[in-house]
Image 1 (tube, one colour):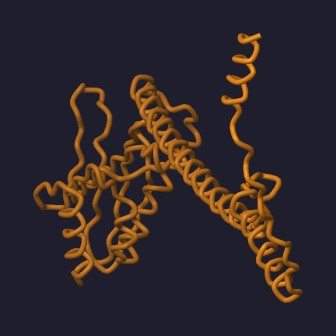
Image 2 (tube, rainbow, N blue to C red):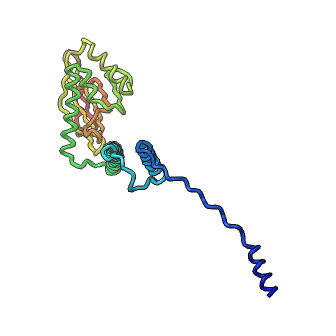
Image 3 (tube, rainbow, N blue to C red):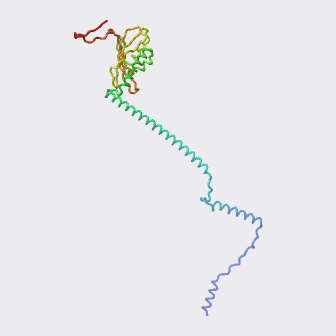
Length: 270
């Protein structure tokens, strides 16, 4: 029928023409030398790519540097220096503690001395009268021994440096340790008195702090004299020191007699 013929014709007209056949070039067999060069290049490229792109630094890939010995040496040096500083600080602390203890002891000693001196002054009574009397008489004899030997160094040891007063026979009062020592320098240089001797010493007053001794002084080539010596107890040095010496000549050697039957005082004069 005409419709069928028309459909066949339209389909035939719309059908595209067949594509031309492809021309394939014959495969070329590469030469052996080119294959070797290409293979080497490929291996090198792959190696570089693996080194640059495929490898990343990780703790497992990193190789540790051997610094254990160096670190130990530095650490030991630092610990040693720190120990030395600690020891020095400990020594300084101990020295300061010892100094503080010494200062405390000195303060305690000064406090005890003040307490003892205060108690002694308040009491006014010798703790051991016999021992104190013996010590006072020994100090009195030391004064005349120094006078006899004419040694100023020994005389300095007898006198008190805090309070000193001397009255030589026929002389005015000389006060002060240095002036008293200067006066004895002149006495020792004098040739008028060759020797001196103490006789009949008597302890007329004794307390914990003060003692008084009277005695006769016998000079060679001079008249007889009497002296009154006052001593003070130096508690810190534990010795009796001379604070006053008064010497005077004996003008009337006879001792006054007791009252007679008439009730008058009988005096004997030379």
